[in-house]
Length: 460
Image 1 (cartoon, rainbow, N blue to C red):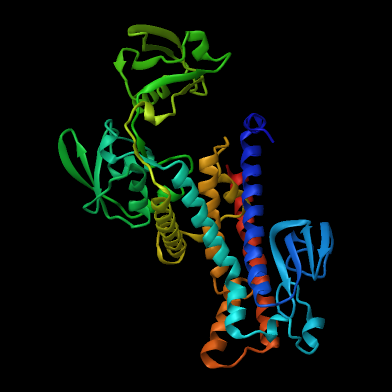
Image 2: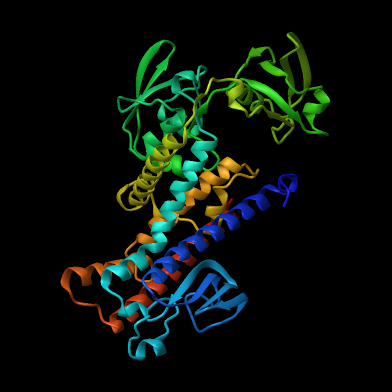
């Protein structure tokens, strides 16, 4: 598919396509990790599937493939049920629940005949590959694109606040200095310092004075569930990018590059000021003073009932601010990629932990399914963003598979560690029952998470 064709697709289609490509690639690579270590230890792999060729987790229902081909001892295929994938390793209790095979005497090529440490590597193979994939993607991105960020001190106009930040006591134009007394150097790190570090206070500079703004109870909950709000963003002037046809903005004579500096004679050089005044003029006349070709021009019109004049402001922040750009040579990119992967993994663990430890975060507001996954991808394709998000999803898959739930890799790892410590192997009957319980739990969680997504769609 050509890039120009991709760009013409709707925003939702682009999101769906990116999600499908990223997840399909990562699932195949995850299963390859199991496959690789199984083959390394001369263990037979009977199936290697992207998606399930049965109604997960019921291995005996609706068994058919969209594609399959047998090569050697392995059947490679694409299943019809598009959630996940699997490898069927001979002599192992897994989602296939092949009890007939397990009732036969162990064979040398089977998983159950291998040493405990070999079985451990086979089970950890998918997680290992997901982490390696994340590292390699980050190394490539930092090596090719480098790293760009907005230093806090370069956000020269201060911040724009949403309703949550305003209720907290932050003002438009405030300049963030630190959180809990710890200086924040990168603008994009401010919100994570408040949420992930559960900051108690924000230090700001306002009208030349330094003030301490307390983070009230409920703020983190409001930030996470704030919908379209962004808590804070860099305050920017209002410069017109595109004017939509047939709108009030076109009738007023607005043009690309116009810079709004006043509304009805009231100074409003920043977007928050312009938007606040405009919203109070619904159905009323509006006169915008704009700078065009170094001259002031007044554009007159009327604010529609939907409060939208019909123009898009410039979204490129580099037009207003000086960004720091770091270039990495190949060796530096490797170091940065490894450290960034570790940081992202740690941050995700903290986010997951907060579901159970924070008083302000509720599972039914934080959990999400496939729709939530899709929303993290942008509506317009950008290779750098796609790669960064794919790497992050790979980290999520590694972490989720590490959870000690029977049916997931982490569940098998727990049994194997028990065996390695005690010298006693967990019986196959116990494994079968635990796997059944784990698969039912996973199905319940999957239905619950995706149900929450559907509920949110109808609610909004």
